[in-house]
Amino acid sequence: MIVRAYNENDVSEMIEIWNEVVEDGVAFPQEDCLDETTGAAFFAEQSYCGVADDDGTVVGLYILHPNNIGRCGHICNASYAVKSTCRGLHIGEQLVMDCLQQGKALGFRILQFNAVVESNIHARHLYERLGFQPLGTIPGGFRMKDGHYENICPYYHTL
Image (cartoon, rainbow, N blue to C red; front, side, top):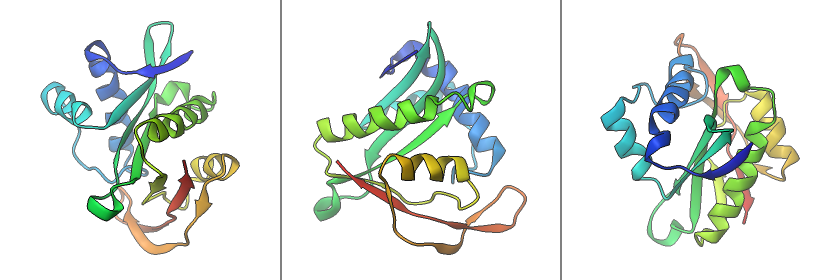
């Protein structure tokens, strides 16, 4: 498996993986799924999109973009998605490591995660193992699909 920049041929598989996470309703803030038109536009507007390519099949992806503008424009943000049938295979780790490299190459100085759901322990353990620093806890910052609220834990990593 390799992590590489996405291309137009990857968009359908990327949309499928992205929508799995959106429909789960426990990690991404988005509530609306992507279709071919909105998905192509969404991925094209990012600073960078990487895909985990397993012998020609996209099994994971990430998006990388500025977290803010102007005087905070040197801080980027990212989101990661791994195909549900491929989770637990350390694909997320490879995506995050590539993202750190790409963020630095694009001139960002910090990668910040705004809304890591506290109960997403696999992601939190991965981020901490890779050197991300927790910034605290925002009580009830994420509304889960079933309507209850969970805490979010922002993280950052210097690039």
